[in-house]
Length: 108
Length: 108
DNA sequence: CTCCTTGCTACAATTAACGTAGCATAACGC
DNA sequence: GCGTTATGCTACGTTAATTGTAGCAAGGAG
Image (cartoon, rainbow over all chains, first blue to last red; front, top):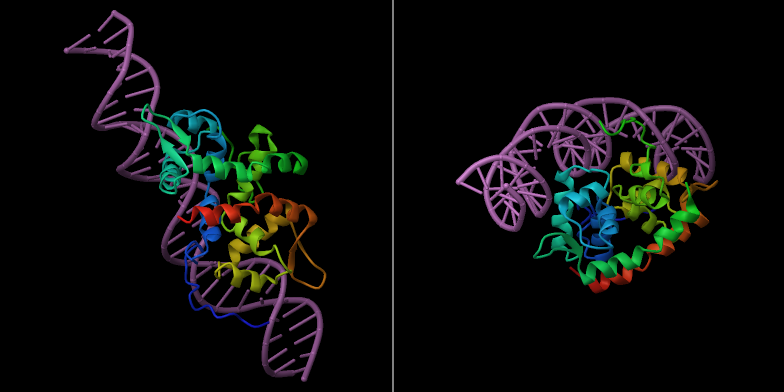
């Protein structure tokens, strides 16, 4: 099997290959990231209620993920406080929403 | 302590609620997991070609993810060697396949 | 036999996540 | 004013996960 040239394959987590899907898969593949998007699907949540929704995950990671998700344009912090999905974030949520039905059928 | 930390690599975080979606979001939210499913969408890949496809990620994590994905019933190791998606794994892939199109529009 | 590829593992080092506590700010009731 | 409460967010030591390199045993082909 021909070993492909690993010329530019020094990337840490494959998030900079130029293909947007790789960057997205990498971003979503970080701990609590998918869960955060999931929990924000409804009404805005404060940082503490979001933490409660995420099984009391440590605020360190939550804050890191929220910053990343805000930089990515998926989450925003409203004027009156509370995090919510941006239109783009809601669109992203819609794309993997079918996972819910799949998970029900999966039932590990 | 709110939870008892078992040192089992098979433990699925977020499954305390009993909701399958939480277990699934947690499983998919581990490093290289989404990427592996993505790279296995086509023809079967050997462990080494899969590693090449995943930017030479360390075989330690790859092997751990592959074991988890096999336990979950999403990936299988064929008789003649080479990893591929199970029917269920392909079904899972189909559910977040639209992420590709979304990522193109996203283009951070 | 040697050479090569397969799936997979050992090991130390690095990084990320956890858990608890706390800060600064602001909005209340008193 | 004061004390209380809640917000977003951070510090810091501990623990778990990931990384990178090397290597193993088994199998096939020459």
